[in-house]
Length: 376
Image 1 (spheres, one colour):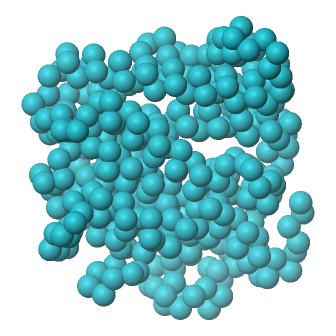
Image 2: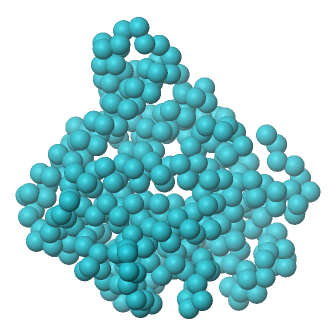
Image 3: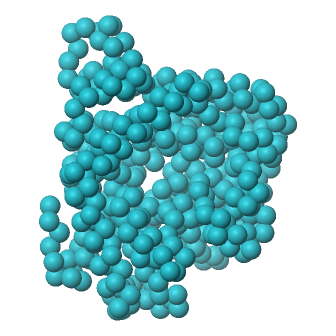
């Protein structure tokens, strides 16, 4: 399949921070994807929380399975839009590499600990992972990914951090946060695929956990439409198969909606190349109706799942673990591996070490350092 002129073409990549000879059988974005898959940070995602902690059940999503789902959705949409599937896949697989243990609870706690030392942003941490923290190659730190992949990984960034990154790397991946332009269409697509994936799988995991009653989902126009459609076609269907089929149809509808709405937006903007697309404003998007229904779904999940008392109880415990780990390592750096303990910026070294932990390793370290047990 030939790429659209406004897609990101690997042959036109802005390159890597450290120049390298091209690979004989892979283009730049395929090589990025392979480096991400082989990284230590990627393997850790299998034991990092999405909503439910890793030990709470074998079938709940983790950061790894979520990233794979985002990659699958992203590639499917990219193919229809003639965007670069390999770049989409690379960004999708790397977008959560900087997430802390315990999901957003861990991130919030670490950000609070770092409030007087630059704060903590998981998107910026993902960039730090691929630029600095991975140590695999003899000539440089990090994975030395291409500009376009790094640009997509930095999904959000505060103004202060964007200006700091721009000073260190002029006209680099943070520039768009300063001049208010967009990333590549592939990066925009990953952002939306991320939202589609977590909304769908959080419904599934919420029902599986018993925290969301499937009947309660009837108040959601987006879900209920496809539940009724499923039962109209299969009136004898019962149980989880109804849920699975309704979610499958909902996912398909969202994918086709993005393809149609984005195709219309691109036709209207008529970007001549990838850089013109960056300057045209957001082009990868839902229709207005789907955007409204998707927002309703997010609000539903916030009320009924993310703020459920059982989830909140675990959230508070997770925050305590992160705070105690931070204080413990800050007081005694020798408790960390040497490459963290010997760094001059102690606070950032501690944040980097904790952010890289899996849920279960963080719990083990908490119990080792404090002598207290994690209460399940």
